[in-house]
Image (cartoon, rainbow, N blue to C red):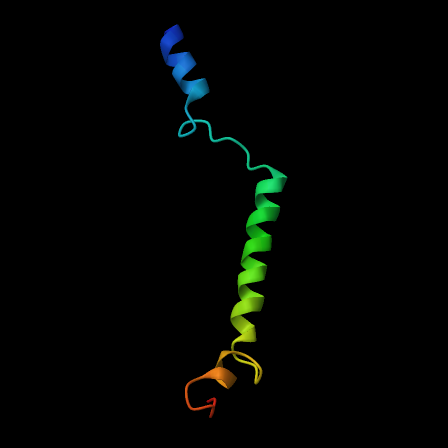
Length: 59
């Protein structure tokens, strides 16, 4: 049988009882990944980073 201290620890420990991920956190994470992906992809279009490299020749 568990003591009250062990029960309190089990209820408060995120390692033993992980908390659910909230929707706003998931949306912020997905939005950041999508924004990074779009900005990274833009570097490979003719008007992106390649067009402004030293020498003006692009890729």
